[in-house]
Length: 184
Image (cartoon, rainbow, N blue to C red):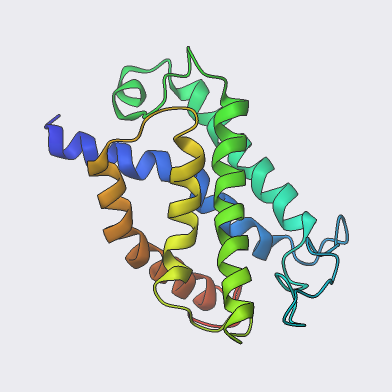
């Protein structure tokens, strides 16, 4: 396998838990469990919602659980040479629980921070906030993954360039599958 192909496969493989964690809040929005807003419907000093009532503990819980489940599957696949080659993490040295939690929490934390700034600038939930709608999960995941393992600049650059395109693609896919209400 050439180094370029291996690099691309590694980049895509490591982002799978992050992408699924990012999508989970949409999939579980009809579940009435932990349906409490992260900001407890409090207002900031500007009398605007801190994050908004659409950011819930349910989304955090299921997003993190999804990331942990995906990293668990990746840890099981790690015994096969192909998956060892494309894996960013050494699952023999770092627990899938830690990896999954940090990825899932990082993604959702990044989304939460973006929502904070959207509320400050009067952008409604679901409205476009380019490029931050596309980069929040990437930046959050990168920051929290870096607590576990150093991320090469080449991967960071890849995610900043390719991340927005993938985000837009998956949002459109969700719209076509009738999971999302908007294409963006």
